[in-house]
Amino acid sequence: REEFPNLFEVPFTRQNGFELKVRCAHRGSVETNNKARRVYMKGTPEQVLARCDKLRMGVASEPLDIDMREKLEDFVNQLGYSGLRVMAFAESADLKYRDYGNNYVYSMEEGKDYTANFPIGCPPAPR
Image 1 (tube, rainbow, N blue to C red):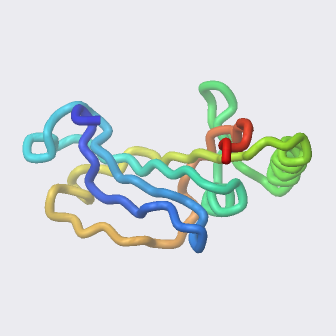
Image 2: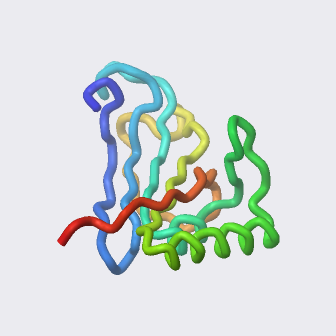
């Protein structure tokens, strides 16, 4: 975590259904890192996938069209019906340093410019 410093964070809440972090995309301290930034998001599939316009399948990304969204929703529902807690993960393309340098003020912006990483199911947390 120290190698890829955190620049901005939106903590998880039930209201927004996701957690978001902006990190340096390359190793180095914030002061000396003049390379790209990247946004990482995790949360409920509904909230994360609503902000995505691409889906990573292996190493390639492809457009997240209506048919693929429906397949993903079905898959997420199957995992949920099996008693699994489902999370989705997404990341942005590299944000250029010249646009998002050390003085940039981050804020939540709506938009679909993230790539979804396949949702996963895991057993519910013990209570």
